[in-house]
Image 1 (cartoon, rainbow, N blue to C red):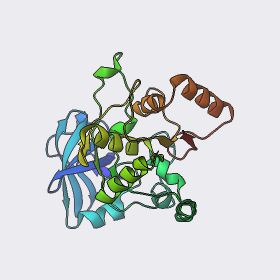
Image 2 (image 1 turned 30 degrees about the vertical axis):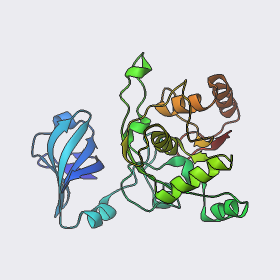
Image 3 (image 1 turned 135 degrees about the horizontal axis):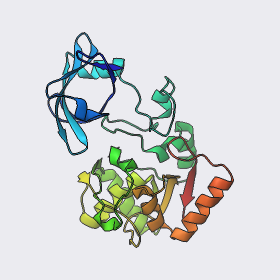
Length: 268
């Protein structure tokens, strides 16, 4: 746990993404109480300097001899707030997909957590082609819609990269009249950004809600989402909203597990 300089009060800094050398966007609870250039001490030679507040995020400067090493040593797995316990050593494996390669995501693309290396091999043996994209899930994924008019909701940005080989596999799949199955709503947003704008890399702020004509994705594997979330709206655009509500009612009745460490559904 980090501590404020002078007051020694406990404080948590949730690093989101670097914007330039040693400068990061971050979330800090009660950020209004911080003063410009105030230090947040993590260890003798590792501290965070508060610079400013930008919208909902703080801008901080990290002072460290080796940021990567210090983050691994002192950092914690940022479990979603509805998981009401401290992170544990096992979460370093459990809250990470088996196919993760590149750093940058602030949350796990949770639909992917259902897959093990053994399961992926079994899927391949059945003749299913598996393709990968890079996703840096943004914290805004969990941000509820608060506007009465959903078209006025400001959608968060998320970074993605779709490799050439994945695009080629999608094209072949479509030509052979087979289905493109997306694992997770973040994958859907990335693929539909490509389908709509031809964009293969960068940030997307696409907001998918009913009615929406999907251009790439045919089927979807996804978890059960929070009420009033943009993810639930995306799923409702993929399938009839009454059907989704019936599925959710059944899930509640049968005590399915919801959210990040929860159960999944396949929508076809």
